[in-house]
Length: 116
Image 1 (tube, rainbow, N blue to C red):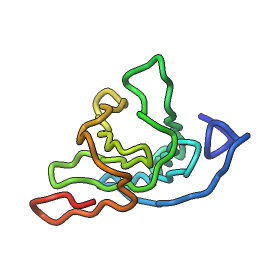
Image 2: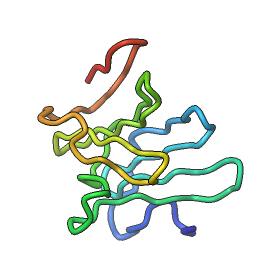
Image 3: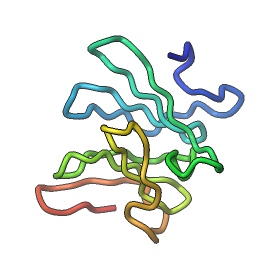
Image 4: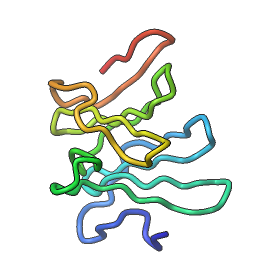
């Protein structure tokens, strides 16, 4: 557990999205420092950031939007044009889950589709 919301406090802590998932976790994304997830049940904070040598991390720390799709996956849109998916079982990300998008600043969904 980190004492700071974002793991790299040397950069910007500009928050773009605060999102509550179906489990009651609060996802807070940063414009430069990845994502922090507050688990409201056990009062812990998990930080997720890009690591170029680990393909199971975010594809970028520049996050602009977070949503939960109709199947329950958490989708994360980055300024670098990727949409990553979070896997609750492995607590890791699948990079480029929806590839080749141009700067998805906002994601939203209805019961059938994802829009960016």
